[in-house]
Structure formats: structure tokens, C-alpha cells
Length: 160
Image (cartoon, rainbow, N blue to C red; front, side, top):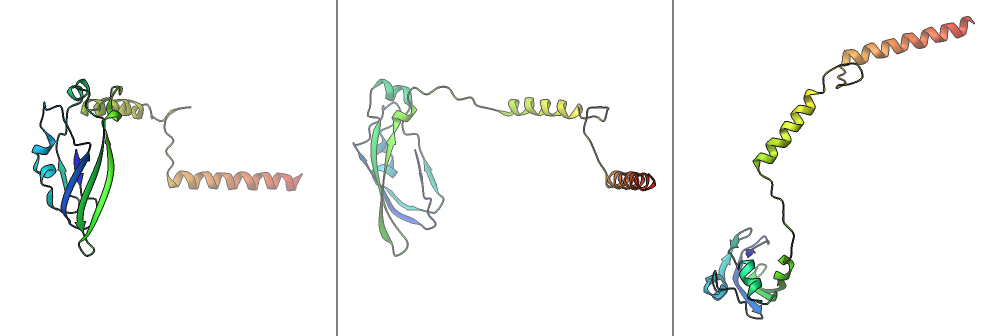
């Protein structure tokens, strides 16, 4: 679980209420043993995160614990130290029966870079293949050649 102050000012007296009361598989810890959920968080600066492992899926699933909890987060903040209340659902059911996730690592990056390097090696100048590189001088020569061709055609039409 991640508790984050996404606002631009300090949040004070942050408290949490779970409905129904949160239960965990106890393989890890009772959430109410954590001070943040037992007593609240006195100050939470902007951008600050408090992270904790809430539970572990297989034991939770096996014990058939509730999937959905309504969480009410109360806090005070600016302007004027006014009270705020946010409500949201925590739904463990979103995580059951998911398919595997493919994780990528540095070895996958290396493999892709090798593929890119091999492709770039094929970009050699040649007839009908390769990478076309054009310099400003090449462009000027082409334009001059096109102008000469145009003038020659115009002259032939005029002479005929």
C-alpha cells in the first residue's frame, strides 16, 4: 500500500478508516500494528510517500478474506487548515486470476541493441539498397542538372 500526498501543501492529521475493518492473512502483519493506520500520520509533506506491504496474495486468497474495502482518508490542509475527507475502494479482486507479466531486464535491452546494430550495418551504400545520404552539394548539383535539362528541353521545343 502506498499513501502519497499528491497535493501541493502539507497534509496534517492523516487518518484512515476501513469498512469492513481491514484483515490480513497474518502471515505478514496486522495492518493496525502499523502506526500510520493505528494512530495516523501527523504530517505528510507534498510528494512524500509512505509504503508498506499490506498483504501477500496466495495466503489472502486461500483464507478467503474480503476483497473489497471502503477506505475513508481524513486530513487537514491548506488553505486555512480546513478538513478534507476522501473515500476510495481497495479491491484485491483485481489481482486474482491474472495472467503472468513479462518482465524485461538489461539482457533484453542488450538483445534489442544487437538487433538494431545489425540492421544499421545493412545500411551501406549500394545499388538498390542502403541508406541514401544527401549533402547540400548533392542537392545543388541535382538542382543545376534539372535546370540544364529543363533549358535543353525548352530549346528543343523552340527549335522545332
